[in-house]
Amino acid sequence: MPVELRPLEALTLWHRVTLDLVREDGQDLSHDLSARQLAILLTIYLEPPPHTVRGLAGKLGVTKPVITRALDTMGRLDLVARRRDDADRRNVVIQRTVKGALAVERLGDLIVAHGRVLPR
Image (cartoon, rainbow, N blue to C red; front, side):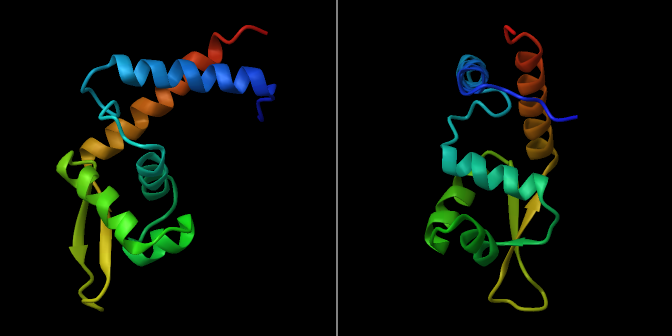
């Protein structure tokens, strides 16, 4: 069932969620991920695999080095993992991790919780 939000309601929801992320101080997704990193992370977890550096770069309209830098950060945080594609060693396959899946789930929970209390 679609939810209809006015622009101000949508911005209020986004604001409240991002405030919670900042306030969590080191838990789940509050690792100060940039909007680009968050978009990459959500693409990896919400769209069916396999995901490659080349594929993510094309999908997001950025260069492969941009994806690589974002994955470096997310890899250090154990939100994603990388491995070489056995079929084509030139490709790097991005894998989901348990910690990353839990972080994305937590983000979804935050959005739902704040969406429930939006003034109507």
